[in-house]
Length: 240
Image (cartoon, rainbow, N blue to C red):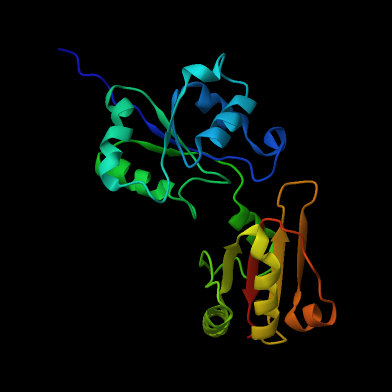
């Protein structure tokens, strides 16, 4: 009896800003999406809308979308991966950017490796890497820390610890924040960092409203800026 080949797991990048598919999503991603009818995503509504916008399937209704988010129980993964056992490809979609990077898709990728399922990462926009590229800070040695504590005391302590590490290792520190807390975090950074530390904020990357500002904390204090509730990446590098 002929054995059925397993499907593959594709890591599909998504857009960072609305209506940027033509500018930031490579043709290779669209060609791969053509081969996929089963998707894992954080939000079914936005995932369906994104896949539909690529215009590679005749009908979005024929596709299957399952939720894979931070609350997904690992025990659910065998069932979510059932299409692969039947020879079908599965695509993982992040809400923004690249799956598995600051994203719950990493759990599914780990499971795929355990089951000897081929994992295929595809090129696309990553706000973390784009911000690092545009910052002018150390791109040879850097660390991504996700989110900082929300409370003022915890945020200040974490910022000072990361600044010490940055100085000792000549390491760029990178983190993100939800849009509605951009100004609050910026206030913590300007207050807690040394004046000679370089601080960069990258907002609305890849969109027409993209703004990337990099200067010393001392300069930020002289020219305070208020940002709208917009997605942002923060980076800093302590002076050596």
